Image 1 (cartoon, chains in turn red, purple):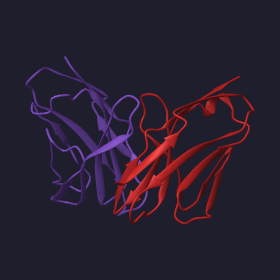
Image 2 (cartoon, helix red, strand yellow; image 1 turned 90 degrees about the vertical axis):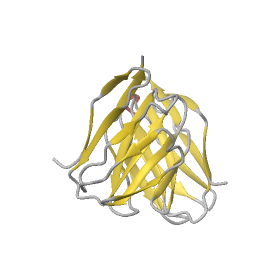
Image 3 (cartoon, chains in turn blue, orange; image 1 turned 135 degrees about the vertical axis):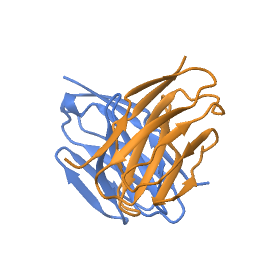
Amino acid sequence: EDQVTQSPEALRLQEGESSSLNCSYTVSGLRGLFWYRQDPGKGPEFLFTLYSAGEEKEKERLKATLTKKESFLHITAPKPEDSATYLCAGGQGGKLIFGQGTELSVKP
Amino acid sequence: DGGITQSPKYLFRKEGQNVTLSCEQNLNHDAMYWYRQDPGQGLRLIYYSQIVNDFQKGDIAEGYSVSREKKESFPLTVTSAQKNPTAFYLCASSMGADTQYFGPGTRLTVL
């Protein structure tokens, strides 16, 4: 069965405390691993797409990496404004299979 | 400004009533999608359309219907057959199988 699993479900960090979010996937014919950020009551905002194992992409304090079974979203020296739910999704024939998300809270 | 708009932002439905959620995009994207999001759960695909006048069921299509008469528009009707429609509904669009971009969402509540 195709599925995407994210861990942890919730993560609380102090400002400046770096950490990583995990996304494990089993998606047949995977065509891209996508990361989104979602603020409460808003639509998801696109962050990254990764297509092949070993690929890395960065944006400000975020870096996404991909292996054959997992993707990680590394957050370096987070700030309170990084608080949000982070969603990952596996692409399959034009469709996306989403994990349940990791709710990140960064306290000052 | 290019983007995706959804309306209304909040919608209330009475028992036995059909309601229609609007989704419009001016990104010239071919494909459009509808997702449902429940608290603590990931997004689940309801319907998607890759070209005008054609659409396919997603994982949870029962109780929903769509149309795609124009490239820019992909309205979703929540019918009375949907027994638990209270949720956050998200519309997205993409160019082919590329990155999907999302609208701001519609929150539907059953009274």
